Amino acid sequence: MTILKTFRGAKAALSHPFPKEIILPRTLYGFVFRASGWHQLATAILSIVLFTAGTIPLEVQRRIVNAATENGSYRTIALLVLIYVLLALTEGAVKLVLNIYSSWIGEAAVRWLRLQVFEASRASVTGDSMMTSEGVQLSIILAEAEPVGGFVGTSISEPLLQIGILTAVCGYLVYLQPLITIIVITIFLPQSGFVPIMQAAINRRVGKRIGIMRNVSEDIVQMGHAIDTDGHQASRIGDVFRINMSIYKIKFTMNFMMNLMTQMGYAGIFALGGYFVVTGKTEIGTVVAFVSGLSKINDPWGDLVNWYRDLRVTQVKYGLIYNSAQVGTVSAGELPGPSPCLETRS
Image (cartoon, rainbow, N blue to C red; front, side):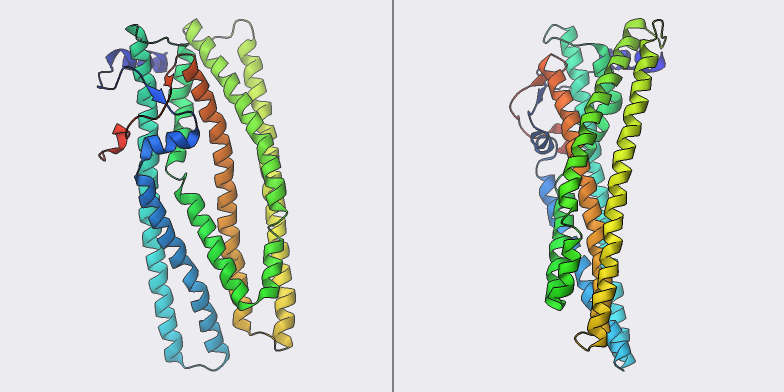
């Protein structure tokens, strides 16, 4: 098979000057800082700038609507619109830089992790360490390294950005109208309960799926080609299909419940906000700000939930890689110095 030959050829030809003993940290975040180091501080700073720039437009929107409905001067409206456009450009530019930078960090970590497996395999050939099956190594290099290394790029910046947006927007909404804010906060409280439970169910299935696919890879390597003489491979592929479908059912049910609660939040804002406008207790611009604010909250909340999903799944995947390291695919131990893959950009 072409992939298998390439894998074996790459192991034989590897000549990078890595140390003979390849060390993996015990925890996922140990790996994150081992593979990226001070780059996480830079992404954290960009995240702070981004959520600050993303919150200010809510107040600008409110003032534009109030100026238009309260017979304000068009010059004032035009100035506010110009400020809004400048803020949008700033937010977009910072987000562009952050996305590219985070992607580079993630890809560099993927490259580093793959090279570690290659080097560990090369060392095992020369007798420096024990090597587990080629099927496990093949699975790590072709499939498992990508999500684990890719998570490194967003491991710090993503939760910091989304939590920052949630905190800033909720604080602003409390300042505008505390009673309506209670409705907004209420719709997210139940989600903090059912999301971790449903995600734990997904994690168990992901771990089982990875184990099955490793068995598939091991059999292919042992046979030298993809042939199923005893029907075990077909059974495993069927198991993977059933596991994936159960993951989809849980995932999309979770999304349905989250979206339903968000729509209930909009209904509550329109009902209570409309009552306050009719009774003169608030202005129309405040209701508009709450509608925009809920969108500003819903999007980062969804992104934060997705990040949490990735975190839990990646912890499972990294744990499997680390366990493989314990039996010889790579060596496990304490954190060494900075990762060579992030010392200079390539």
